Structure formats: C-alpha cells, structure tokens
Length: 224
Ligand SMILES: *[C@@H]1O[C@H](CO)[C@@H](O)[C@H](O)[C@H]1NC(C)=O
Ligand SMILES: *[C@@H]1O[C@H](CO)[C@@H](O)[C@H](O)[C@H]1NC(C)=O
Image (cartoon, rainbow, N blue to C red; front, top):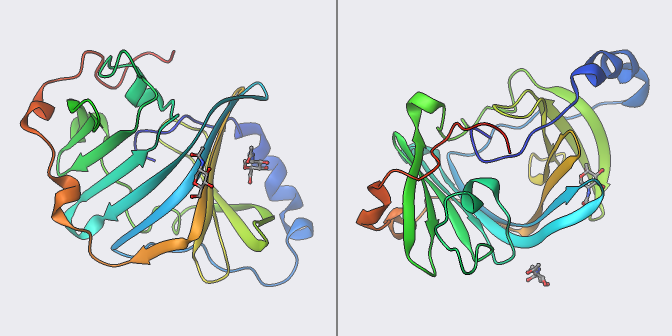
C-alpha cells in the first residue's frame, strides 16, 4: 500500500515459504488477481500490538485508478498512523479519518471536524496502488478460510512493510489485506457483499481547500 499501512517482517520467512510451497499448496491455485479500474468495498479493520487490540473499526475503500484517485475511509475507532500524527482532531483522534489520493498528492482528512492537510505526494512515493500490484511479482504465502470462503494469500514486498499480503477467493474477490511488522499486526477483512465494481462519484474526492496546507508531520518520517 503505497503509504498508509504499517509493515511486515517476513524476510526470513521468504526462503522458508519457497521450500514448503510445493507441499503446502497442492492442487490448482488461482493466479493472483488484477483489480478492476474502479471499485468500492467496506471492511472491518483490526490493529494489534503484541497480541493486544489497539484499534477495531470499520471502513471503506473507494478505488478509482482510471482517474488516479482513491479514498480510504477509516471509521470511528481508527488509529491509523497517518491520521493520528497530524493533530487534526486533538479532542477525538479516533474519529473517522480519510486518506485521499488525488493525482500527485495524498491528504489526511477528518471529515467531522473538517480538518485536513497534505501529507505527501508522488516524490515521496505516495501514489495509489496499480490494479496489477499483487498480480505481478507476488508469492503465494498462505491459503486460509476467511468467513467461510477459501482465500489465497499472495504476498509482496510493500513500501513500508516487508510483506503485504492480499487474500482473494478463486474469482479474485478480495477477502483480506494483512500485514505484520515486528509486533504489529494489521488486518482489513473485507465485507465481500459490499464489493462493487464501477465508476466512483466525484464528491468523494471533492475535499476542502484547506487540504493544501502541508501536514505538521509530513511523510516520510522516522518510524514511531
Ligand atoms: C462494523 O460494521 C458491522 C456491520 O455493519 C457492525 O456489525 C459492527 O458493529 C461494526 N464494527 C465497528 C467496530 O464499528
Ligand atoms: C489477521 O490475518 C491473519 C492472516 O489471515 C490471520 O492469521 C489472523 O488471525 C488475523 N487476525 C485477526 C485478529 O483477524
């Protein structure tokens, strides 16, 4: 995830996975999916540190690659690291927060307090994921049943994580996004019945003018 995720640790596991690969995943497995040009999907998000739940919330991804824009809404209860550090909602830092990608720029936007800032842009690597990000160069790491559906987890080195893992079913519909960094585990488990392919409305990307103000802690920054 070009920017807003938390990371992974699986360098060492890589070689190991290669060895067990043949044994662990017998039979025919689907190839890693390519995303449609535009879709939306809701999810439940969990962030755990050393086994303890730091945050549990819902959210929605609005993805519109055709127009090079995306909006990732993290609902009430979120502790998204990019949202938290900008002081945009000091009284209620866990209020709903959106990460909005427009061509060349990424913004953090608290829609309830109507506060916003520009976090980073193309120069810092803040661009939206390409539809084929998991399709090319990923490795099958795990096959798991998620909410009753058999899902194939393909992993890839992320911008900040060592591995980002995307689980999808046989038809390519997403089941879960998963990443681990040191002691932090981060999952987005998608509500598959909310998955809708198709153009995204402009209003989602119509952010206030104040968003052009540079964030107090622009990305990249030293890890916390
Ligand atoms: C997330 O949404 C589901 C389905 O609408 C709801 O049952 C659940 O309570 C919500 N969870 C949180 C943490 O808001
Ligand atoms: C997070 O996802 C991983 C990989 O699917 C899974 O093993 C783990 O149990 C999940 N954790 C939670 C809290 O959902």
